[in-house]
Length: 382
Ligand code: NAD
Image 1: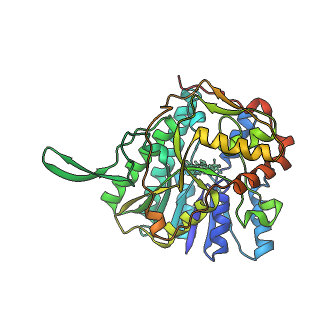
Image 2: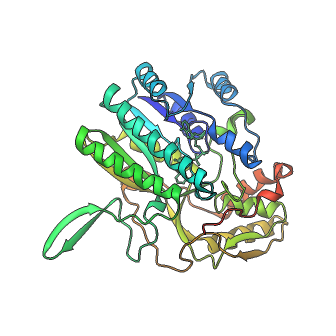
Image 3: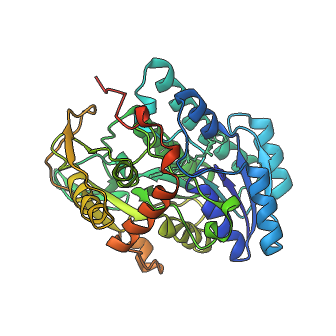
């Protein structure tokens, strides 16, 4: 298949591009390098040194003989996007290319507006581009489990059967997102669902959990292929952030009680889920939703797991309960369905001590790159 990976220079997109290329797909990347610029803005960095995109794809070609074409540009520039779609004529368009940090979206008015314009307009352009240029192309869009919030009933995969005043219907599952970033994803989902209905677009919305890890078989082939690993209070996600904190002697920063429970998955499962979605496309006009995570953990569970492994590796760290900068429930019911990707063949890589140890070893090798002032949360929701 010809597959475009938008956001292919990022944490999920880069390993996905390599993996799909290795499986024999004809892969190209769109990215505007915005993520690298946000690091400059926040005076932050990836703990792993990352080569620029051109060097990355040249090394991939040298090692495997496979070409990944790159298009540097912004999804918000419609003429650019249309030209890429014309040249590539993709069978699948994998859309990772958004501003994905909840804290970044909550910095101030400008960052909230930037996040929603970048994400919502970018996705609208992709929808128009597919309609005008490649109407049969399957859109595989990264959403997030955070779209659902934490309702007091189990979370279904996209839709809920409801009985009301004696009548029944299957309706989109209610969304209760917790930041302007998560809201942008909900707006995207609505726009995609609408265009599936009115234009017959085929789309899969992948409501992804929090991704941990950094390596896949492909990114480990050479240091130039290394993936980024975020640890700062703005872009670092739970687990990866805790592991890095433990290697620099920082307390593990649990926000509030730590009972916040979420779905998680290994980056190795992210790449496989995209392959599964691409190889089993949605029907024309279908808005298909998969919950893309493999296990549920509370933030405190994760901190305790990291503390134990870090101790075995000689790092004594404490778990610190900080005032929660977010507005969220800290003690709540959480259970979400996640059978659809498994039914299509996903075999999860579960979170073991060994997995934590491996990420910890990578973090140890680069711990001199950690900028300690960036570790604590700096953005408040209020
Ligand atoms: P990332 O920031 O590492 O990668 C996103 C990439 O998209 C970056 O390389 C960035 O430069 C590019 N980009 C952003 N806006 C763009 C635009 N307008 N035009 C072109 N390129 C643009 O993020 P990630 O962690 O790889 O996440 C990828 C996707 O998966 C996001 O949509 C995110 O919301 C979703 N997701 C991620 C996680 C996670 O834990 N990382 C969890 C759930 C969902």
